[in-house]
Image (cartoon, rainbow, N blue to C red; front, side, top):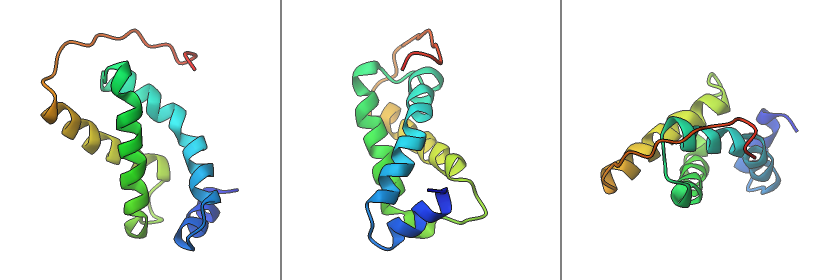
Length: 101
């Protein structure tokens, strides 16, 4: 299913579209959350959950001029900023390997 069809499904109260988009984008978001934003491994699931929750809650405001991956990355940046505001940032140096999953 293409992204635009998945979005249509979500907007029509379907669940299949959300699952498809989740499966399509969760690994790259996980990599970015761990390696780019240095979120501790024990908090990654919480952060990913918040990213997808905000995505789902704001699906109606998504503009088809933007790619879903771009929009998810913008949401991720916002969620990560909130995370670090709530949690004092410590040095969480992480060696990243794209094949870690």
